[in-house]
Amino acid sequence: MLTRTVLLSLLALLAFSLPARAQLLWVTGDYRVVVLDSERHRIGISLLSAPDQTRRQNWCYLTMNTKLVRKVYDHEGWMREEPVPAHDILEELKPGDVVRINGGRAFDLSITARTIWVERKPE
Image (tube, rainbow, N blue to C red; front, side):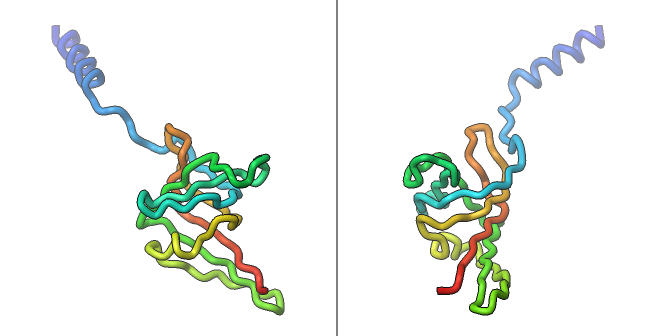
């Protein structure tokens, strides 16, 4: 009788528990920035191999823990990495930038960015 009670309790717990909200997997890849949505703290991205480079394929969400690393090259070819504060990420990026994103992919296939790298070449 105790086993039956325990099984019914576990079944009720599983049936009425909240749905899981977790990242499915970690993803790292190169993308092109297409849209900046500052109201919802996200950027629209597309794959570099996409046929239409102006069409958003996915959303990448930014959090206060998201790090942006700007790779800056000087005229002699030296590179330095400069961290950008989380509240300045949307001001630093612009449509057309090629970025490398490391983050978690959610159930709706969006990406929650952990780290974003962007390169700035000398003019």
